[in-house]
Length: 92
Ligand SMILES: [Zn+2]
Ligand SMILES: [Zn+2]
Image (cartoon, rainbow, N blue to C red; front, side, top):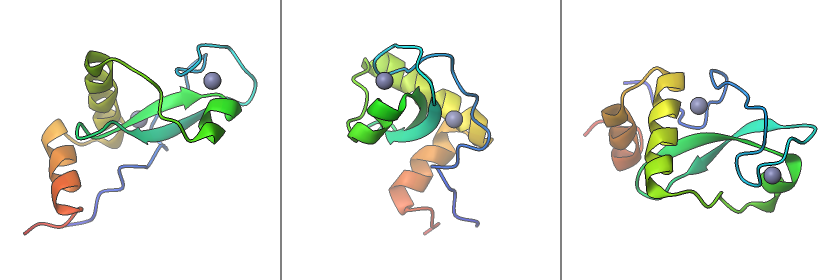
């Protein structure tokens, strides 16, 4: 099985404002962030937030939604994501 690249953002749509600080800044970019044990989510962030290294402070319900959305961008299911996190992309 091909290892999943959960940090691939090539299929992720760019938002209109930073999802961390909420401003409509120049140079917004889609970045991936680990949402604890939930998985990897993608977020639109401004250069300041993306460079801070601090994951956005989102509610659990939001985090679940973001991870699920990112699964869609990657063309995988929530289960695939969990499995990739679990086994490091390798099937045992
Ligand atoms: Zn920001
Ligand atoms: Zn995504």
